[in-house]
Length: 539
Image (cartoon, rainbow, N blue to C red; front, side, top):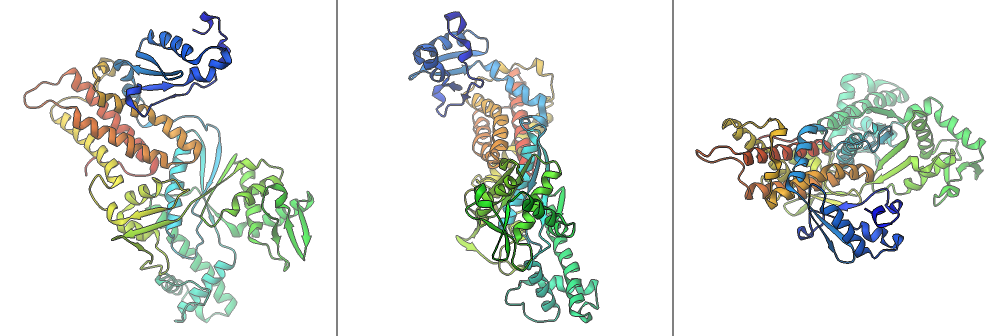
């Protein structure tokens, strides 16, 4: 079209943005292409939009093309062309929404990584849900994802945990800097069952026994809790292995060799401020012991040596300093700082009867993963933790999440899937086939406004998944399922009768609407699957 009017077709951008307008009166889709390139071509954007409207309006599948404002172009699709989205969903099935945007990318996704000194608290539970969903979303876009748990089995917190276990085994109160809660007494008792003579050993050997057995028992409980929550890991990486293998020492020597460590006040410091950090960091303390960052340095080096192109860390709200710190470590190894991404999650608050829930029956000081699951179930817990951006704190209303009503967001989405399943079962009972030759389906019959909205919503799903992966925001999928797809289906169902009543025969419109129902159910199932939430057929 541009060439026929003597214009330079190379002015077209590589990607033309076409979006769904918020106001349906503005058409099914809209683009600002004429505004983008009008000045470059020396043509008034509104005039250019008129030429585009004329050309597109003559194309098969376009019902109308209209110019709006200073040069926007609003498009309406013909029903039969729009209905091909339904065909596409039905053909693709479980693969609908998948893409290859991150094909070939090897991603190390580290999340939860809670210290093995107690049950997983709500912050870790949020990462268990969001991290697992992010892994699913990245994999759906072609990435090779390794889910990794960094097992902090070295450092002072483990020493405090061991002292707490020993005190509990001896019937004494927890040390002032130790850990309390019924779980400590339970694990201490389990240690004694496994090693009956542990308390009679010399102090060093006794503590080593409680460390070995107690930490192992705690970590097995953590892994079981995560598994029951639907979150499993490919790798459980032990921090202690970095020290035992010499990886920490080798990494420190390499940084010294390249001049990125310097000695001051008896300690060795990383010149991290030269790489964007707010200050230099102590790597080896004045007593010769490695600081915590020494393990982080060796750990990042290990990830890169294992061949990962991208290392994503999902950390709690008190870890903002780690963003610049880890990127500085990458730069100090002459690596690209962008191989490191750090996502920071904000706080989770539980509310019941309008009041905050602060204590756990088992942990004593914090609310745990088990507490949340016991209160609302796995599906509601996962969905409620994923559906909000991790950049914001979230209040979980326990009373709301057990309601079987549309006010409960996970019920609202799952009910849409169950409702469609009921329709398809009823069709089967009426001997109306759902699995038919799609070439014989007249999708041009789907002309109702609610049908059009639902079809276009189905067409948005691949873009939503791609955006969720690109921005590391799985909450986009939850919001799409809840605010767009489930809402569009419920409105369609209330406005468009799917199955015949009484002695009415099934018609071609019946068949087309059943295909639309089946496609909607498929996308709901695909989206819930990416969140690790079940798609029930009955509720």
